[in-house]
Image (cartoon, rainbow, N blue to C red):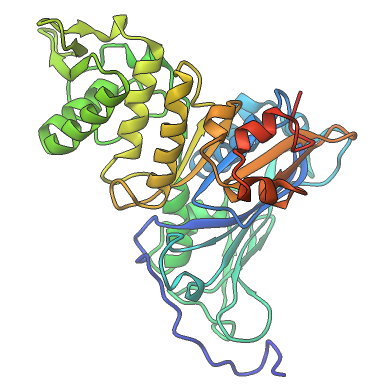
Length: 423
């Protein structure tokens, strides 16, 4: 049996995303010492992943892991910690050691036939404060290029010092370049990912840059922004009118399709437009079928605005690679939730724009959960030690058999059949 140091025959690996692409698919997430997430692993993640559990179990904390990692890369560890408190407050109670976030991902979408030919890449970030200042104490990227042996590091840093193997397809035998970072509070991928000689690192940087964590606030969407088209919806939704303007100018057929889907949910709704005011701002207007004059978004329900925003996100011609939405059921009629869940799945598998996003959703609604498959549902709760635990529904005793016999997951959860995840 050849060792990992033997000459290896490299298989024809398939990079389905070019080095300048942001397409990727996370297969495994590991989190350590992040508040209630003292040690959790989500393995074999699907295109659509829904997290269910009682209040205070750690669902929002799980979503914040993605936001924290993105903030660390864009503004550095210290500024990323500012809205979250000090590192001592972020670290799990009664725990020592660094905060750890590890992703295992492939540079491709989930459903492509040659996905398994695309190497599995690991990115690991460790943050600690050995001298009282929060810094990146360890950062690595690794993969396996040959048929045999263990994965090898092509980026390996301790306290901002280490080495990197450059090139599009790093090999273990390639020369390593020394790395010395000036700012240990900023992940290396933020700096090295700007260099064309590191396309794998650059691809990860762009991927994380493209993540979308929805903090949609209906009152923000009702504001009057300055006129001008915006291609993508902002995280709070304050540029909703600008996105409508962009779609009306650049993708009128797509806007018509979004409005058609809205009318199927809200039969009275006939049209939505963005009207420019005399002082150069945009007013978002909605028109009911029975009336000739449109009315302002100030008089539209929160649920209508949210549904409209979700459809814009899901039907974006160039959607984000990762889409995170907390409790989409808030403000929506229960009968709309099954449809919404099915549309999240369709989008995650490329059924709308053709470009899928991996989708992560939290929910408390059995109506939303009813539309899910067992592999798509994760149940989270606090253990006796106060830390969060998480398990996928298809791995719970009896659940696959219940579903196979025709039961819905929402009903099973509400009836207590999961034996976990309830208040």
